[in-house]
Image 1 (cartoon, chains in turn cyan, red):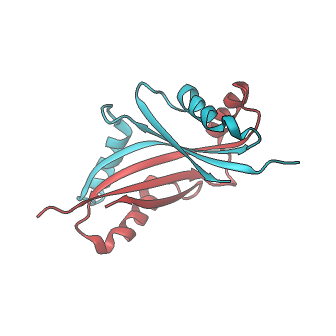
Image 2 (cartoon, chains in turn red, cyan):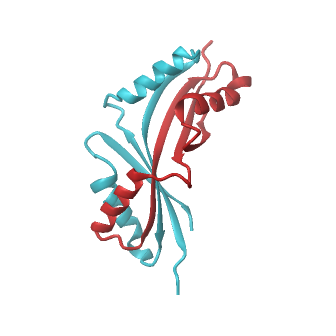
Image 3 (cartoon, each protein chain N blue to C red):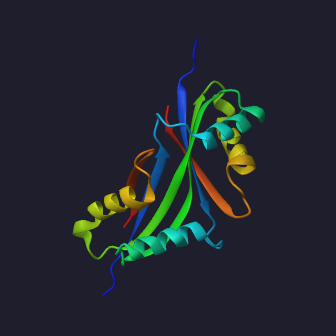
Length: 86
Length: 86
């Protein structure tokens, strides 16, 4: 028997209190292109995971653990994730 | 009068047909940490924009244009965006 595939979306963003040079650069570029109404830009990571969801029970904990340990740097980044499809 | 701020979320992902070395590397790392059910990882960008939504009419076109011209590389990346809040 094969387990259904679960798609997980992880969003990693620089914390509000942390400088985001990439976001600043993109913001300046968009201003130069004429987007004067633009107030702020933050650039983060978007990670798509596909998992065979055999061990449903621990999935949430597992995702949280790997988000903290590998996918984000908790000192300077926040993360959130959602199940995109089952 | 001040316009309400619109939050826009932009998701930029490598096209399915394009190699994603960063995703491969993250996938291998998660496998090493013991996530054997993991099938695929793709790493993209997550961009948060805050705009004073004065010129509502053109907003959608404007976002599309800047996604194509600056925020993504249409040769190797797909993008999608959504209004996160008004």
